[in-house]
Image (cartoon, rainbow, N blue to C red; front, side, top):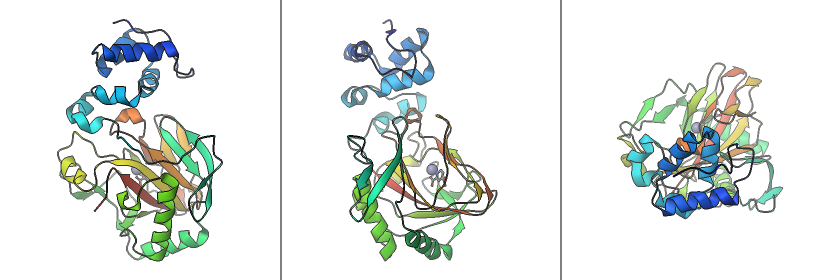
Length: 299
Ligand code: PD2
Ligand code: ZN
């Protein structure tokens, strides 16, 4: 197998030649990993390889083994989900109808799949969530994929809490809006999490999906399957710092009260480039609400 020279940079669209070559190779029984190797040997840049392979037809990707050593262990877990949450953005929509409001689309990125929304929450909703969460905050725990339980995590120095789904009127209203915005049933969402970051607090870069190679993951997945997407809603912006970062692509999103940041990951694999983190807050307090979207009903 010798790899196509049709595209070696991420700047160009996937050419018809390249697409044909990739499909032919898969059809001939070569694995995605073998294609990667071949492209590397022909001088392709790592990011360009990922872009090219990510553009495969879903059927082709689903039929091919998953990427990377860890994902290889995961087998079926690392294949793209059949349906994914996310706004319908055909025709470069400037607004999304979320039922009770038209939500402005401020920015989109294809890979990682990122969409920034303005005016998603009102001031009253931000204040209501902060007030209801405030008395229940505790040092944030993180789902522990080694065991399936929860532990204190030094990578995350915020305080947090979870609402039950539909717990109060504001939570219900916001959850219904999110379901319309992202075309994903309310029942497939985890309860809303609220985090408070004081000066110095941060959330180091991580993936929100559960690592298929970790022993505790099958237990976690029993409750609604994998996470497929995250909607971060900024309830209060700090005076300085606290941006949400995507290190793989050099993107930083400034927290802005009422706005929402959606990112999707169609498989539990670093190739989604969904690595992200919360930079340290330098002054003031940052408050966010997070909605994680699962494959199936989250019970
Ligand atoms: O608060 C953030 O910016 C942030 C960054 C990364 C939140 C999360 N992850 C999360 O809640 O998963
Ligand atoms: Zn996260």
